[in-house]
Image 1 (tube, rainbow, N blue to C red):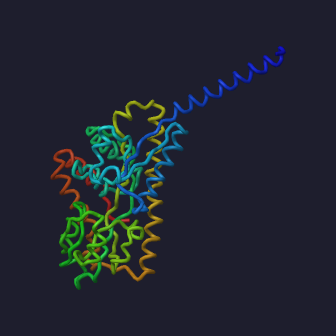
Image 2 (image 1 turned 30 degrees about the vertical axis):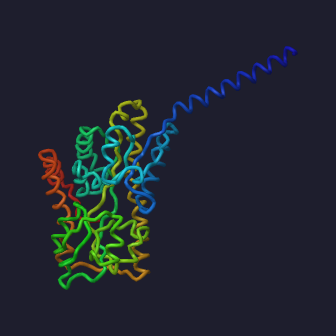
Image 3 (image 1 turned 180 degrees about the vertical axis):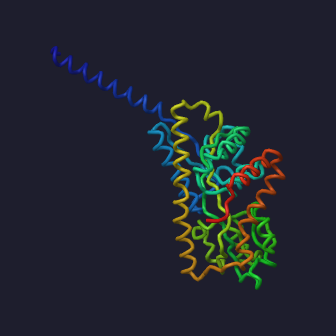
Length: 334
């Protein structure tokens, strides 16, 4: 082998080694985080928001983080907080109603103005973060989601309320349904369609996004208005995992969370508007509550959540509720 050929061979070998080293470093630098969420493909709006979250985090991390997504086929929806807190999963995108049995602190955010800037600058965000850190979780985002509606299979009562109606509920809706004269019925979301179809219930409380993917237009006669309350798109991280991230990556994750708070509502709002229009086109028009009920429905919803949170959350919840009320942060409608 000539001197020049030998040099060229050595150069190629060195380049190959360097290339392998670069690939190895990149593979080592990128880490996969396991994201758990309580929805599957039948909840189109929430899945769209989850996919948006993944995109935001992966882009903000500059390729340092990849996300592997797991849904309610792996862990039942109302049992997902503990597996994240214990480190079985790294990230959790959820609505706080799904872990109300563990803590209702996060659901207080449903009663708070949607402005991310106000949630942060007021100090409320830090209070919620502190509460979840006690439970082994780091808060990354509390973004606003769309509100809720009642879907009913017959007309509302003559006085413009839900008087005498059996309405599928969960604890978040119970107080509102009772205030409107209805009777809350606790049912898993998977049983709502057939229960309405068979007349076992007269209606259901439901987010305004996702009704088409859930085929609710096939069993509902009216979409009741006004929309009330708002949901919360919460993103949490296992605290031990968070503490092991580099300061730079922690900064990127918080930036991703802040971006998510500013943009997540747009994702579901588009779906909600399309869903309402699709149901109207399919012969499921909107029906407005009576004047008094319509004017007070957000107060009913807020007070119901505050009462439940104060009952289960003690002094910690009472302090946060008072903070919301005293600092002009109460949500009163979109």
